[in-house]
Image 1 (tube, rainbow, N blue to C red):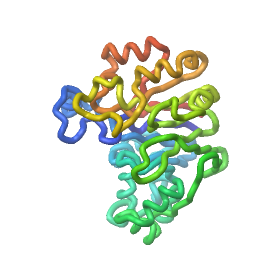
Image 2 (cartoon, one colour):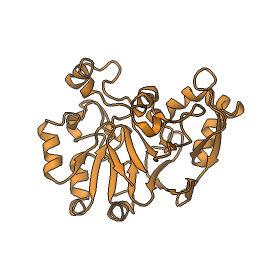
Image 3 (tube, rainbow, N blue to C red):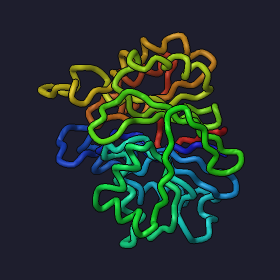
Image 4 (cartoon, one colour):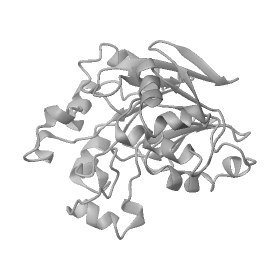
Length: 282
């Protein structure tokens, strides 16, 4: 069983619509520079697949999954066995639209989310139609809860502080071996941050912005995330004996370019940068 990184970009990916800065222009002509919307999946040798967050790039992400024999051997039916949604920001749930009758037309696909996330989907179009037509079957979970989508796969979810315009936000521990926290306001606001990273061999963590200078003219308090420079300091000392892998890069983040000085600084500090289709054995 393994975790596969399906997308390492922030919600809008790279390139981002309407953006004209150098990384976006490069990604429009260089497929290797593209970063898809934030998502991971768990795939076992029998082809069972759990999707964590349904990004707007879900079709391309499935195409990449089809290159893996275990996933390619799946026989029709739902494209995934279950979906876990961390929250209702655009990059993490808009891919659900492709499960409707206009596209995959899934049947009773289990979708896990908090009470607020489930309520959001039940109350708002077009998502409520996925529920009423039984394309998806909602399962409410709460912080601290453990679930087993299938034998051998154990998910522990927990609340993390992040902008709650629509729903609350979850992080997830997969078999207590891989920690996934793609969105958070800041590490000090989460009391268990260092303890959770310390207990996992691999941690995939929010690295949306590199520094406050990245988006001149924007009030970053409105789109709060920890800066990479702060993340390196906050978790310093924990990188020994475990892998701390940064993900969820905004298109403006200089570490989108693995050859940049900022990316080199991350690696020199003993941290890693997530790559599309990177795999972690569980």
